[in-house]
Amino acid sequence: MKYRNALPQLNGTQMITDGGLETTLIFHEGIDLPLFAAFTALDTDKGVATMDAYMERHARIALAKQRGFLMDTPTWRASARWAAELGVSHDKLRAVHREAVCSLRALRERLEQPETSPFVINGVIGPQDDGYAPARLLTEEQAEAYHSVQIGWFDEFGADMVSAITMTYSEEAIGIARAAKAKAMPLAIAFTVETDGNLPSGETLKDAIARVDAATDAAPAYYMINCAHPDHFVHVLHGAWTTRIRGIRANASRLSHEELDAAETLDDGDPVELGVLYAGLDVLLPNLTVVGGCCGTDHRHIAAICEALGTSDHANRSQNRIEGKKHAS
Image (cartoon, one colour):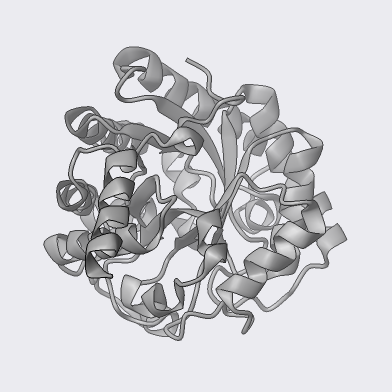
């Protein structure tokens, strides 16, 4: 099925994403990723087979847990700036996007169970600069022009939506939202935060979301938090603004971004503990429908998160929260 005009996660369907694709490929599969660009793995038969197996593993978790699967393209670093540094031509980059979407469409056709486990094709875009500490900040207009190329490809090749992952400041997110709006493409904006719960730019998460919504007439379908441990942001999740957050893709590690950048070994944390922390986030975020992982996470963490959240639908959990609050008062 195609879901561009009716994303199931907006209607309460519980969805999973994959884990940390890049860290899994590097540390568990032994695949070199120059500039952390996962799409380069598609240049070899081993890389293609590994990527296919990785996505199917997560798809089967979704099926087993009767959750939808938000299927990411491996294109976080498949934009012009990074392609130039990798020596990848514009035409090849376009072909990467076509093949990525086609691969996920084939997986969906083979395994999807629409009634219990809808599979949504999600075109992933990343920041123009570093995802932790950008050296160059784009204006809103520059960001719109830069990211409109990838968004146009995802529109052309039939992705259901796009997600901007590890956004570090609001201006770039605003430009992306405008580019997606121009294509009528559903968009999720995922901000990353530091250990204090603020964006690398110093903006609060609340302010960043408010700025994007104000500048784009609330164009993003929803927001997510990614590439940070729950301990780094749980303390800021209070207030009506948190209803705009529908997704969490946390790190398994409690290390700061600076420490992660310098690490030579993988800190994959404790999958069971991470699942428990997600259950706590589920109580705080009334519209949480998308859960997955980021750096250091893999299928073990996603399975543990599902186990901790249970297989009951979100409406039932929301009712339990209401009843719990009544009882507490």
